[in-house]
Image (cartoon, rainbow, N blue to C red):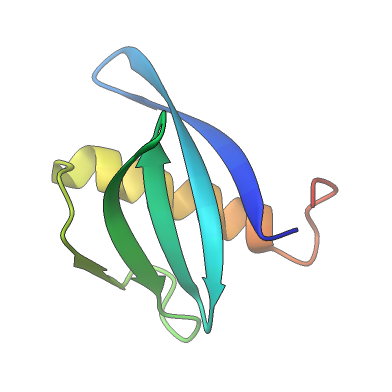
Length: 79
C-alpha cells in the first residue's frame, strides 16, 4: 500500500496524518489534503532521518518517524 494513515501524540494532543510512500524510504506527510513535509528514513540508523519543506516541530517529527518505522516494520500486522 502506497498510502496509509498514522495517529501520533505530542504535548498531550493527538494528531492524524496521511503518509504517502514515494520509495527508497521517502515519505510525504499530509495533514488533511495539505502536504506539510517530506521525510527520508535512514534504515541503518533508526534514530536518524532527513526532512525537507517540513512545517513540524521536532517532537512531532520524531513521533511521526517512529510511527512510520512501526508501520514499515516487517513485524507490523498493519500494512
